[in-house]
Image (cartoon, rainbow, N blue to C red; front, side, top):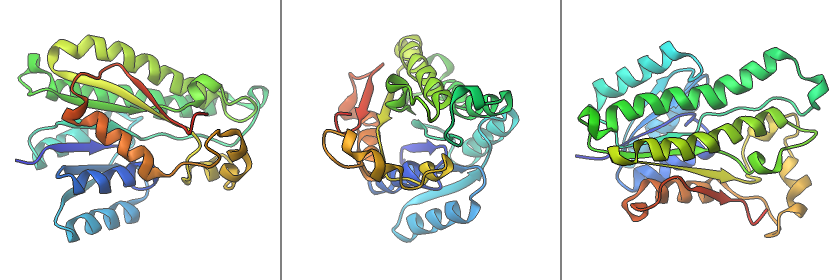
Length: 248
C-alpha cells in the first residue's frame, strides 16, 4: 500500500513541485487547492500519466467546514494519511503597517495560521497512535520572513510565519509520543508566483544580491527538503526549523 501525502495549496509553486517529487518517490497524493482548478487537475493528469496516484480536492483551508470536507474526501479515497504538507499560504500587497486594515490582517492570519492549525488537527486525529493511527509526519511551510520580519513589505505575513514556527515546536513536543514528527521548512527568496501577489513579480531579481549564495531558489530545491523531513531518513528529526534560503 502506498503512503499517502496531503499537500495543501498544491496547484502551483512549491506545492506543485513537492507533489511531482513525492509522486516519483511512490506517494499517493491528495492535492488541495482553493481556486486554481485547472492547474490542479492538470497536475493530477500529469502525475497519473507517469503512473502515479493523485486526486485534487477544492477547499479553502481557512474555512473549518471546508477543511472537514477535505479530510472526509481523503478518508473516502485513501482511508489513511501518512504525511501532511501544510503548504497553503498567501500574502497581500507590499505596504507598511500604518496602511494595513483589519480585514487584510484577518485574511492573512486565517489562511497562513488558522488553516495550518486546522489541517494539522485533522491530520493528528488520523495519524496519532492514541487515536488508532500508525504515526506519520507533518511538514509546515514557514518562511525566513519569520526571523527577518519583512519590514516595509508584509510584516503581517512574517508574523503569521512566526506563529507557524511556534506551532511547529509546540506540536512536535505534543505529539512526539503519538508517533508523529512535526517540522518546518523556511524558504527564502524562491522563484514562485507569490511575489506577484505582493505586487512585485520581479522581487527575486531585486533582492537576490542580499542572498549570500547570490541567487533566488527554486521550488524543486524546497521540495527536496520537504520530502527529506517527511521520510524515514529524518526519523529522529522533529521540532526542527530548516532554512532553505541560500544562507540569507
